[in-house]
Amino acid sequence: MKPTALVAGNWKMNGLAASQAELEALGTYLSDGAPADCDVLICPPFTLVAAFAANAADGIAVGAQDCHTNTSGAHTGDISAEMLKDAGATYVIVGHSERRADHGEGDSLVKAKAEAVHGQGMKAIVCVGETEAERDAGNTLDIVLGQLAGSLPDAATAANTVVAYEPVWAIGTGRTPTVEDVAEVHTAIRSALVARFGEAGNSFSILYGGSVKPSNADELMNAANVNGALVGGASLKASDFNGIIDAYRK
Ligand code: PGA
Image (cartoon, rainbow, N blue to C red; front, side, top):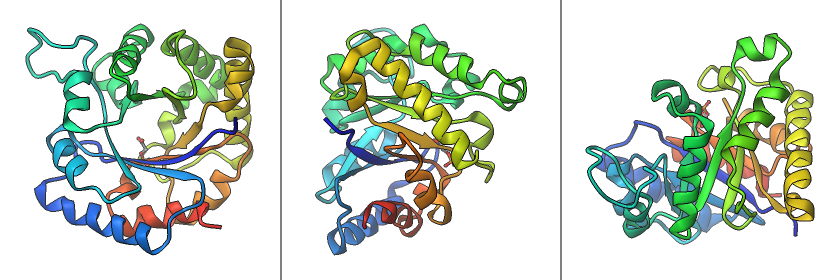
């Protein structure tokens, strides 16, 4: 099975009730022209998940940006995968580099979170990526493939898991790797998925993330083994996000 393309917006810690206008605008863009063979996802902050899930137009899935490993209990301030499912989410991002850096999340925790997401019948978007120092030291593939091995549950399938390659130094910086560098990492991820999961490894979607915008989406999305984008800043405005989705409109 061919990987399904996915363009996913990660709103991070941005968005208030009034931001629903952007969700509505995105719905209008999609009803005017749906992309071919491409899913569209918005991951707002927890506070907006339920409202977005209730109001999103057809063709827009809603997800969250993190979850706890447990289903419920004494974990002040945390949100479980079950709660997110109950709120209408169908995807949860786990292991984003900002969670890894700001909250000290390591691969085994990320894996447990992905398992919690799977346990609720949702899809986990598992993020991996090297820092600038790791790239400069020539360790990109070691780091990325190590994170992938440690963060993906054995029960991962193309139906319950999406991989996102996000070089840390490209996130929110306006800098991107070359198309050749993106293709090299994505192809290495594809090979690792096939080595671990057999032929089924060819079906996983592998997203690129890090400073994707309308002007570079087309070339990045056409790189080898790139099956979509995880978009931060440029997902906040429906017009920009729609310009990225354009990469799948022809
Ligand atoms: P960016 O963020 O598009 O703002 O670089 C991407 C991400 O962190 O998912």
